[in-house]
Length: 291
Image 1 (cartoon, rainbow, N blue to C red):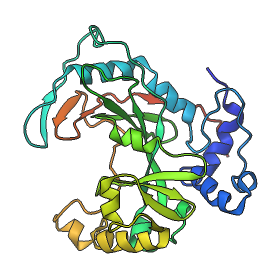
Image 2: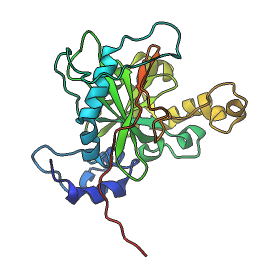
Image 3: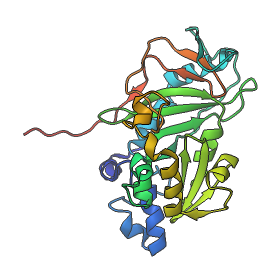
Image 4: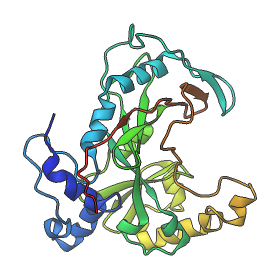
């Protein structure tokens, strides 16, 4: 296992909202290293991304036997037909991967989403305020029996990551993986729109995003904020729209810190998922002090 103890503390200090966002801002001033904060230079061999806290713990989760077995059970269970919300129990077979072609789960990538403060207009149109890391996504190395899948990890309270869901398809992971040094990829989940942020310029990555920008090829982050404020500001959690049950309102994707059931379930919809009972949790050991 790679030794990342020398960089763990600095990554935690940056938190979920700096990291690659800081790189985006730093690039515009040509002082990337000085602005990025106390992140030590990455080793030449197999560096870990500095923009994702506890990344080694996330790797441990997606490479674990428990998650692989969960993926195999998911792929071995037909997606239920019918409307969204149709569910069926996934059988707990002793050797779930038997009979499936060999596959690996790719390293996780960041799932960034627009923040409620940015939507409400209370946060300035800056990358560090507009977007935050909410989950991690990992796709499979190959198509298995004609199906693809995406593993979603969510942060565990106190540090680390755990399995939140396994979704049919790999579109989200593919878009999330298009981020590069100096750019940031994020989603507007209400539209299933994916965008790329270059400095403070928003560009669409799919048709939903092009519609979300009113057909424009790009716009400033400030102009994009005006659009999402008009779309969702009156639908934020706690609003009349939300509390009266007209809709779920606006919020990033919700995932619970603990699994809601001990039995994995497969939900039938265009984005089928399995709820991972007995969540697979990996914590990074932290130093603690008393007093």
